[in-house]
Length: 303
Image 1 (cartoon, rainbow, N blue to C red):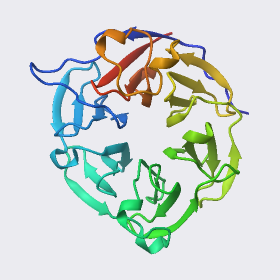
Image 2: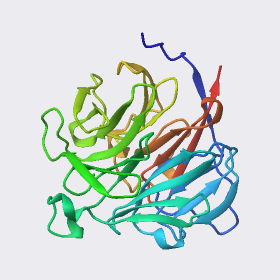
Image 3: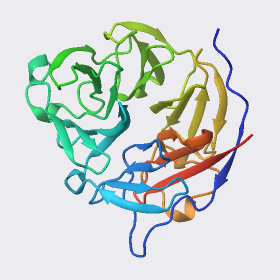
């Protein structure tokens, strides 16, 4: 039996970040994740491309000088006692494993051996997730809508999906996450407006019943799924796929799913174009809007 998520309330923190004088985020078209110590890692199109904040939103450092302009997917993964970054870069057509300080440990180029592509330019990975045995899956969200499976050393094994609306197919598999509690892989199938579940060998398992507003990314904890929806809201689901709570829903359709919303149209408590969301420590939530000015929001839990 799936336990229900508690009906928590959330408080919007007006000052989500503290940046040094003269420093701006730039375009936030990527992802956000939280390390075990509470540090928040945020992708941007700036140089360096990754901003690191503490659990209170105070700027600590930048890393990823070579990742500017196309860094899209980011997942923090623990292996033994050490945490690592896995990143997906749409413009460089590759996935990398890095240390939390940004050191490159593994680079995986376009999957030529899959036979699905004529060149690297057709491959634009948007998200990566790591399985318990070290294998990882890469979602080609801005390319041909395949999900590729690699072994822990970065050797291509197989792929699944491809373009379509049938079960097991995708129209922009924008985000991918592993749910350890179900031993399933969850894919945010953005333009089909749904989440789909797969077994770890890539075989289709089920579709989630909730109809979503162009889901971009799913973050997972022991309670359930946190879904960033590009059309102006964040949704919490339980593992049965039932909606438990909508957060910060944008009432103006003109301000949803658009990158060019300037400061004067921002409102506390209301999202614009949520592109990624992550559970923080103690149930807090961090949300990155797709926005040319750069927007990171912090919601704290009220028990």
